[in-house]
Length: 461
Image (cartoon, rainbow, N blue to C red):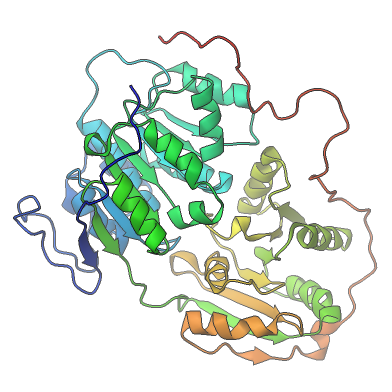
């Protein structure tokens, strides 16, 4: 039975902020026996299920981040939550802990069927979905839960095989690929107990909300499921979606103490367009540039830049929307493992990726949105490590600096590079390597197989 999306939009939200966080109102909330929100709240305070508690300890997590401390006190009791939090605040673990603990605490006793998940997590990009799924696997280690990842650009039949292999506990998906499964009657969302919509603002920006509406309509009514929605901003559109999809949600807003962490050294080089590549090459070759992410704004720029670095003998990888998903996965794994030194990327890598020990983030071109600057530099200086953010400001985009500084609430040091940093790179020693993969293939046959498995609906077991 499917649920229509015409849900009541008059629900009343309970607001919670880091500045004013009292105990739950006894008239609206459970007994006030949850831990007060103070620094360094241990996970042990929440009396989680033992297998989950062990997994958290094995991962080395002891204390909650602010978003975890504030949301878990409500979500573990079954309350809907809408959270405003930036990437890197620990929100992924917050909703995964809620899901895993709930499924361990409330096992299904009756017979289960394939393709009927208990929890659904939606995220806007393939990389973010895969990161969430990886975190879910780590947190559910020893819990016996089946996590399935559904993303476009990957083999449809393999994903279908994962769905069909045994009853699914958690599905992590991008909207488009999930729609494929729903249209082919290969997934049923009528038994979803917890629905998570991550980076809802990004969903809006990327035009996914119509697809998300369709997906939500396939889940139980909002008073029969728990809904957790996270966004970097609380725009009127996000508030409207929250009121439509969630039931009396607790509104949690994590106001960052600072937009950019103190562990990131930020510097801006004033450089001409002609000298930008010279500066980049010499920075990459400098001591200490062990693991570097270079951001550029457009796919063609990223491809050209990666190709130049490769031809100059730099071990590098390319990450943009035009790259096939299997190649993107291999590139990220190689970068994480230190097999390549430099990752050249568009903003597809700016959000949701947790890569340890990134020594430098270099903005080869300044982002047009100040928010993207914050997400970019957040790839370094993680978990208390020291990181360096370097931005190039040429005559074409230096006008973007004031908005970035307003966002940061501070002036950025702007300097001219020393002469030795503008030395000519050596001549190319290798042939061109990175080709344009966005052009359609000339080979015959179907490409991608996004509608794989079409035909008669498969019988459920």
